[in-house]
Amino acid sequence: MCRNIKMLFNFDPPVASEEIRAASLQFVRKVSGFSKPSRANEAAFNRAVDEIAAASGRLLASLGTTAPPRSREEEAAGAKARNAARFGKEGLTA
Image: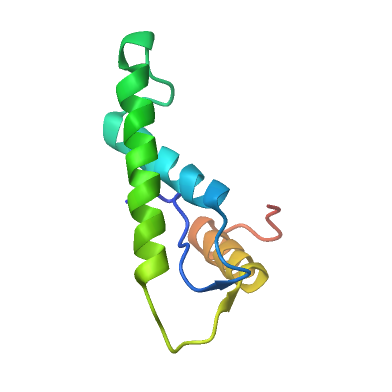
């Protein structure tokens, strides 16, 4: 759906609340169509971000897996390689 929303489950070190909030903000921006809401919509926008962050945190805390935790560096390198293949560019920087 939104390429800027990153997978947050099963990483070492575990996801931080700031990462959950950032993903929630990206989700609300995508759904609402606002990158920055007007003053009239700001309270509803911020409430939605807070509620989605709380629900996401509960979800991540309740999930379990037997798979080994993923490395953030390896995931970033894989994403960079997929991006290079998709857009036909070599040597992209993060």
